[in-house]
Length: 268
Ligand SMILES: Nc1ncnc2c1ncn2[C@@H]1O[C@H](COP(=O)(O)OP(=O)(O)O)[C@@H](O)[C@H]1O
Ligand SMILES: [Mg+2]
Image (cartoon, rainbow, N blue to C red; front, top):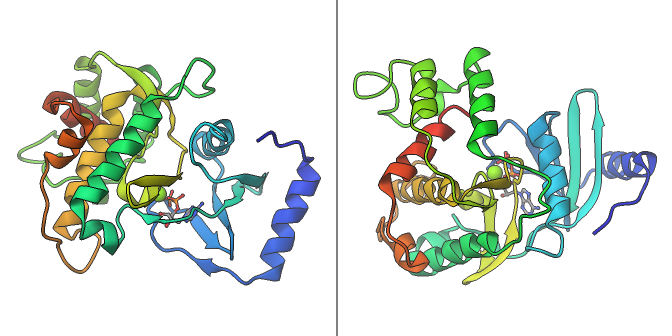
């Protein structure tokens, strides 16, 4: 959908909506963004950054290609970005309904991945391959932006890397060959909406663009395991099978690549 409204019209739309109130604030996201849920619209407010701008550009680019929210307005002001979009139908892939039905959940997740891979990336405006990602990771390391509170227990310390800078060196020295596809970039369960096996919405597209297909598989694999372990809820769920996703995808897990992309994500 082409957005041809002027900046001013867009700003007015967002300002009017905020002034009218009538929203609830979402508490799922982990990125420090605020997500305001209106009746059939969602306003995502986050610090202005390359990632926030990419989220807007890619959500727009993917209109008509994949089920992504409609984009109603976008503005930047006072160091913040505001993206007003449609609300996804269905439920998140981490809802109780999906967590209690792992077969359907993995069918949904596998279908979501295959639909991404089927998109022609020849005119994709965002390139998130390692050459770019590692530069960003280096920036995060240099500026001390790596969130050490939110890493896997063995990434650093006795059984892992001494510090983020050593991990970065390892990532540069062990770059895998990339199988370029359209990648979501943060393909975790709360970022995919579905109804049964049908994908109803991809959201949180700030890191999406051309990248190795194993990037999304790795993040998805980690997210399934974390959600089943009860990391994000009061209880663990039964039925966790770490090979289910691969059976649905019809491919063998490449554990080296999965490890590589999970480690890369630790620096974001
Ligand atoms: N377009 C949308 N439709 C429905 N729910 C949404 C939408 N955008 C965000 N949400 C809800 O808000 C949560 C956080 O939004 P998200 O864009 O993923 O932010 P974060 O970057 O903080 O993860 C999502 O997991 C979802 O529950
Ligand atoms: Mg999210």
